[in-house]
Amino acid sequence: MKSGNFLMWVALATIAAAVIFLYHIQGTHTTEEDNGVVAFASFQQVLQQSNAGKSISSQVSPKEKALQEELETKKKEFQLLADDLNKKHKFLSKAEYDEKGKNLQQMITNFNNNIQKRHAAINIAAKATVEKVHQVMQQELATMAEEYHFSSILPAEQALYMDKKLDVTSEVIRRLDKTLSNVDLHVEEK
Image (cartoon, rainbow, N blue to C red):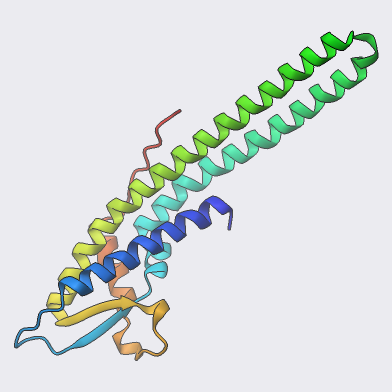
């Protein structure tokens, strides 16, 4: 998994954990219908297997790949320019050589800054898109908790032990797929 994908999934998991924690805090009241059952869901699995999560990944991955390919291509171009400059070194005055070297270094710096800004824009767009999924997932969790009288829904990844009957991951995925099957990624060009 590339670092951008890894960062996106870390962000997804972090947001999901925060949702669960907030839902747990909000759901601590009890009624006669509450039976104190705690459910578990693997939110990493939900985000990797749901249509919305796949939609985000399928949009982010090509953008990251394109940036990486552009970076590799430019790296080769810059290396050729540096090699050419070094070959011409003995034919240029020190001032000319230094000026051309300074210009090449500025081109490289400008390009790297541009790549970093574009990568940041992709990450910002992914985070905003994950937030949309997060909102729908929170609604689905609340509905499930109400329907099944769960007092809490906790991350399965943090459970030391859980009865498989309390794992609602597939239900969360099913509901999320019905409610939100696709999410558009809007990357602000920089």
